[in-house]
Image 1: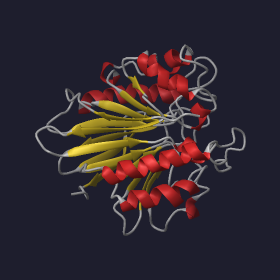
Image 2 (image 1 turned 120 degrees about the vertical axis):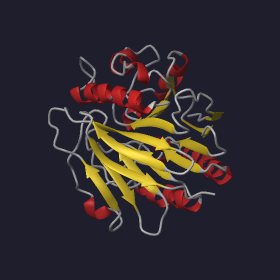
Image 3 (image 1 turned 90 degrees about the horizontal axis):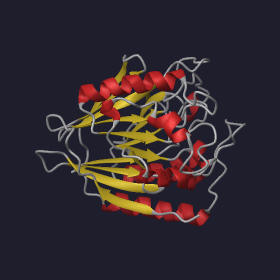
Amino acid sequence: MRVFCVLAVLTCLSCVVNGELNFLVVADWGGDGTWPYYTFAQQHNAEQMGKTAEEIGSQFTVALGDNFYPLGVTDVDDSRFKATFEDVFTAKSLQSRWYMVAGNHDHYGNVSAEIAYTARSHRWYMPSYFYTETVTIPDSNVTAQFVFIDTIILDGLTDLVRKWLPPSGPASVSAAEDQWDWIEQTLASSTANWLFVLGHYPVWSISEHGPTQTLVNRLRPLLIKYNVTAYFCGHDHAMQHFHEENSTVEYFVTGAGHDTDSSQRHLNDVPPHSLKFHYGPIDAFKTHGAFTSVSISSTVMNVTYIDHSGKKLYFYSKKPTRD
């Protein structure tokens, strides 16, 4: 597998409100493999995301993998792009750029087709398997950098049936090491005031899949070393927030894009007192969903978890920790 990375600068600032950068984050949103190719939770989430995006003047949306259940897409002409994405997230406020990364279910299919779809859609943006974007917040010299990574290249696929098993390990060790080198170089060279890493697999999670040991062992030390503001992810179908004692890094799991999972089987596998919030109601009929709203200014980051009905589930505010 040949892996490429892209360095780009975000320039569209038309939706910034009062000197703030506002955007949405969702993961594990990828509908269903049978008609109508979306779940009720995904549809309701999409409707509420449209309302929230309009309210906050959202500039863009971040989608953190498992974009198409259960087996990704076959090629760039796959009808799932339309049925699961274009025809579901129809609100005018959601027509700005969507920054995409791949999840394990995408890697069961053809991720290169998802990259190629960037040229077909005015909003779908996945220029490579991993890439970075930087924006300057208006009326200031404050910058925010987003480092999008492919955690499946780093740690391999999960078992499609035995979902509780950990990832199998990287399909290509050389590709994984190339990305590890790129991640460290990107973080080490960052001068951003706000620095975010975003991927699919979690570092910490109490739910069905639990912590990803490779990310605990290799990504977490980099997040700490380079004073990353937060790591956003999905994979487990719940909304979670972790903050470790004596660390400035926040860990946000926002994997309730098309249903929720009530599992807490890994409650004892995360650092003591690190879990600050968990949402994962029983959802046998896939009617519950949630997403994240983020607002960044020069002085504060506000993170809000919102469910499919518009209820605000959780709010967290953080001041900058980088010079």
